[in-house]
Length: 180
Image 1: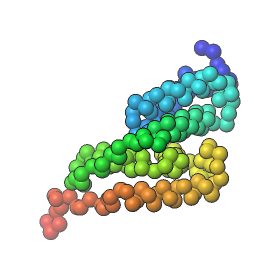
Image 2 (image 1 turned 90 degrees about the horizontal axis):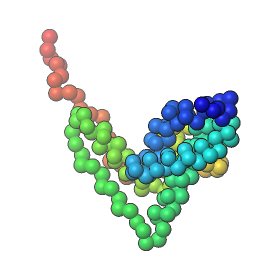
Image 3 (image 1 turned 180 degrees about the vertical axis):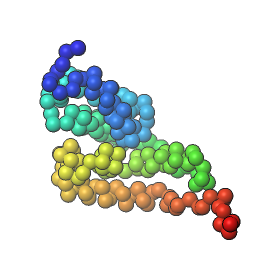
Image 4 (image 1 turned 90 degrees about the vertical axis):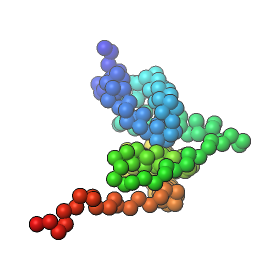
């Protein structure tokens, strides 16, 4: 197998990081098929220029930036005047002890993320999903750290307004209070 640089080769990179790239694309698009397409196209672009990508400080950040740019382009195409996507209604409230409630909560969160403008959504995803700091996000998106903090604060405020408050689940019914 031919190595592109002294660092990781492309096949190893794909095996190790494609899952994380898919999660990013999925949260940004809300659609598994669109996420797969974005990751595929991003990896194709990275492969064509792998020597430059592998020589960068962080190949994953480089390819993640490609995914974010492709998601932004897709969002712009889908949100031209006259073209609107239907908002996904939040899931019905269920028993918090329900083991499948986390799946519903995840769907609600992804739907709420899609109510945010793409730039704001991107900042929230990079901050919470990838645990990047404001300076790393600023460098990735080519904006100031102050703009990142502002977008993050506004995005969280909007998410809090859209999402129902999740209280702590009640104590289990099998409580043994009073038993000796």
